[in-house]
Image 1 (cartoon, rainbow, N blue to C red):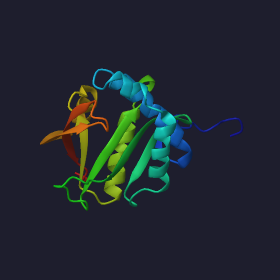
Image 2 (image 1 turned 90 degrees about the vertical axis):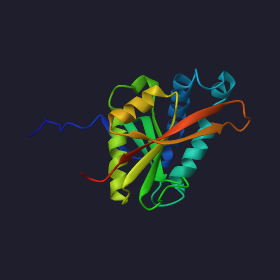
Image 3 (image 1 turned 180 degrees about the vertical axis):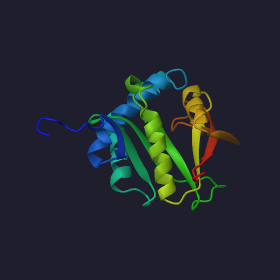
Image 4 (image 1 turned 120 degrees about the horizontal axis):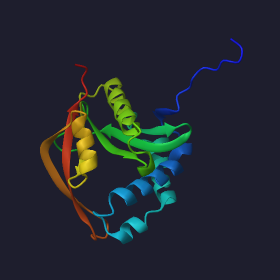
Length: 186
């Protein structure tokens, strides 16, 4: 039919491209400044540089440690508004053949509540299944109630593991808990 256009998705998730690295760094800075203002020292958050972070994301996208390491991005039209990073779990009690780790799940604060986190998480689970993983774990700041509640509402649960992580300059130490979920098709 002439003049009729097909609807297109204005919200989606895809594998990250190297060109996304700067946008991923910018999303990370905005999300951390908004979400961790009460948890991390202001100088640490103020010192976050999206271009420095982008260098790390560029490396993760262009030269991942293995074929099972992935960075995914959530898009609002063509704008990167969130990202997730995953790969084989590296915890001492993990089975790297069966256990994956969600290393990051971040949505820009201006785009929270629009379903981007849910789409990212669904894409992470699908990717893990395709890569043959059976279980997915994530280390979450114990005080990050929003992320923990989000993951728990999706069926994740604490598995009893916890750790403390300090910054390079030891200005901030944070406590993390590990959550897990099965990714095996029911």
